Amino acid sequence: MFEIGDELPEERPDVSMETIRRFVRAAEMEFPRFIDHDAARAEGLPGAVIPGIMSQAHLAAMIHRWAPGCTITSLDTIFRTSMVVGTPVVCRGAVTDVDDDGTIEIDVTILSEESGATGVLGTARVRLAD
Amino acid sequence: MANVDLEAIRAAWVGKVFQEIDIVVDGQRMLDWAVSAGETDPRFVDPDHPDFQASTAFPTHVNAARMLPDEFPMLGNGRGIDGGKSIEWHLPMRAGDRLLAEVQIADIYAKTGRSGTMVFIVNRMTFRDPDRQVVATVDWRMIRQGV
Image (cartoon, rainbow over all chains, first blue to last red):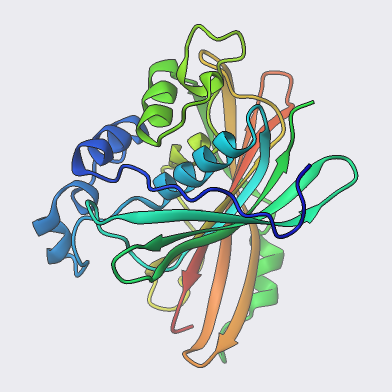
C-alpha cells in the first residue's frame, strides 16, 4: 500500500499569531519570544518564533491526515532554524522504510516558503491502522 | 575538553532520576493543543470520541522545574542550545489520567566539528501510569558549546 519514496501531500499549517497564541496557552508556554515580535527581536531573534514543539505537532497532524487511524510510535526532530510567526511554512514527508509488520518510517521536514530554509527535520515511525 | 572528564560525569549522572512530577492530564488543554496544531482526526479533536487521546507531541509541553540536577557540573558557558526533541509512545494518554513523570539524564556525549567540541546532554522524561507502565518518553537534547 505504501512504498519507499512515496511523498506525503504537502501541508501549510496555520502559523498566524492568533493560532500561535492559542497553542502556547495550551502548552503553558506564553513566553514573549513566541507571541511578541518586538520582545523576540530584543532577544536577538528575527521576530516571534514558532515553538519547536508546535512544529512537531504540525508534522504529526500531517501524518495523521495522510494515514487515517495510524499511530505515530516515535517522532524525532531537530530544530535547525527559527521560523517566524506569520511567515508561511510548508510541511513535507517521504517514506524511507516499510517493515513487514506494517510499520513505516518517514523523513519529515518543515521549510520556510520565503527563504527555503529548513526549520525542522526529523524522522517518524508510524504503525498503520489495522 | 581538556579539563572535562566526560566519562566520570557520565558515570556519576546518567540514569539517575533527579525529579518526579505528578500530572493529571488536562482534556481541554489536549483539545486546544490538537486544534491549534491543525489536527483533524477525531481521536484528537473530539472529546466525545471513544478513543479521545493526546496527540503525538503533547507530552513535550511538560516542563521540569530543573532540567539538570542541582549539583550537575557546569559545562561550557552553562547556556544550552536546543538540540531537538524526540517522543516515543507506548500507550495512549487520555484526559484525566494520573501520571508520574520521572526526569533523568539519559546520556551525555561529545561531538567535535568545525566549530569545536559540543557536549550533548539528553534529558529524559518518562511518563508512567499508576501501574508503572511507560506511557511515553520524551528526550530533549541540550547542547553545550565551548566545553
